[in-house]
Amino acid sequence: MGAVWLLALSCICSPLVALVLDSNTIKSAAEVHSPKKGSPCMTDKDCNGSKFCLSPQDGMPFCSTCRGLRRRCQRSAMCCPGSICLNDVCSRAEEVNLTEGRRTDEQDGSELEWTTQHQSQENSSKKANVTSQHSKGQEGDSCLRTSDCTTGLCCARHFWTKICKPVLHEGQVCSRRGHKDVAPGPEIFQRCNCSPGLTCRVLLAGIPQRSRLSVCQKS
Image: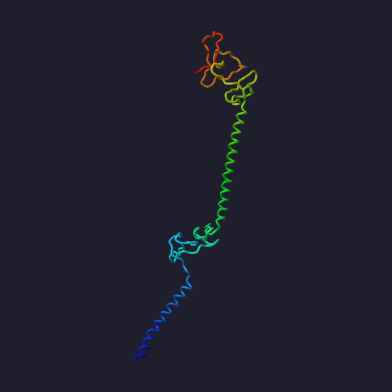
């Protein structure tokens, strides 16, 4: 009777044991073929050492080993220490600094060139103004018109030519052109007009009628 019970019990347990063994075998094979993932993470700061937080499209984010030089990247945290992500490729930091240095030198060169050109234009303009001012006739120089003389002078007749003479100030003798009391005929010693704000008028006080002079007086 006992032998029968043992035989029955072995028949019942054998399929269960086989099922458990098959299950363990499948699980072990799956662990061997599937890649080993790191600890779960939310950001790169959750990963230690030279790892970054990788977010696959079909799974949960996990800490993955950093990527070496010339590997594709999306941010610098994905690259191994000493390199950064440049143009979606992990590159050495020295190369980036060299590139930035070249850009800075090009910009500095452009700014220096613009500054030099601007200063040259300003210097040329100043030289032109100085030359134009010095080219104007000084007192006693020959002229054809008042614009040929420098500021404060006018072009007036002197004998049979014209020279630059000073504009008259208050109290200086002047010529009242166009008035009846002025003798007709050409003036061989022509005077300039009075300065702005002054008028050429006869000086009456203390001067005889026949020798009255016209002087520049305040209007």
